[in-house]
Amino acid sequence: MRKPIIAGNWKMNKNPEETQEFLEAIKGKLPAADQVESVIAAPAIDLNALVWFSKDSDLKVAAENCYFEDEGAFTGETSPKALSEMGVDYVVIGHSERRGYFHETDEDINKKAKAIFRNNMLPIICCGESLETREAGKQTDWVVAQIKAALAGLTAEEVSKSVIAYEPIWAIGTGKTASADQAQEMCHAIREAVKGLYNEQTAENVRIQYGGSVKPANVKELMAKPDIDGGLVGGASMVPDSFLALVNYQN
Ligand code: 13P
Image (cartoon, rainbow, N blue to C red; front, side, top):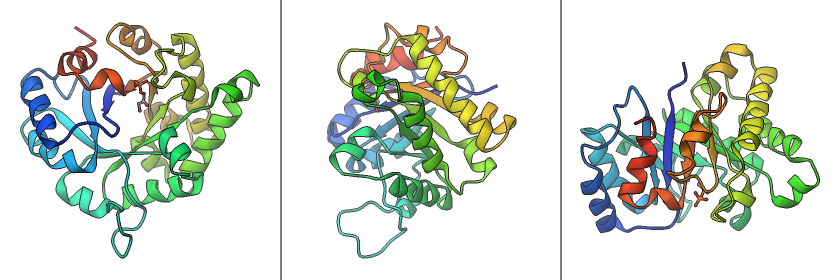
């Protein structure tokens, strides 16, 4: 059985003080880690507070990005080695905002995935099509190609432990959620692609999230779909009560 994984993605929001306030508000209210994995992906400057909180709580911590080299003369980048040493569990890679605004390529994302495993963390690998691609009916080919490129050279064991987040760009921050059926259809296609690239067991193990205007009001319907194992949530993850409603969706 795949364990559900609900992750907030704060994007470029909250300072360390605001992070502390958020953590005070969710203290003792997260679901047990063996039921649902609760994750927050936060800006690098907030990770220290999250890691300290995670030490005696059920929260897991994600960085929103990292570089693909472990250390060196790369001004302004974040070292995956340092993230791992500080106690970060996951790194989000390939978010459409990074692909779009910062011109990250499939090749960069693949190198980052390898760097994350090399440093004993796990990737949350984002993929998703634009509205234009969907309207042209090419969304499945597009997303499968992104996944193929991101996973290139990873072992079946690594892919089994990976998280893939399907986030159609047209549903991000727009209030326009993909229907649960549209989300299920793509998450299923991703799982089939993993089966083709690796094997049945790997496809059964890999966890696939849906992201794009997920909120307390629609999380249950999405999570009821057989190939949707979690959510990657922007806006609705930033308010403590809303985040708690999302991670406690089973109650
Ligand atoms: P919203 O939930 O705000 O649509 O953002 C989705 C997202 O990009 C999460 O990574």
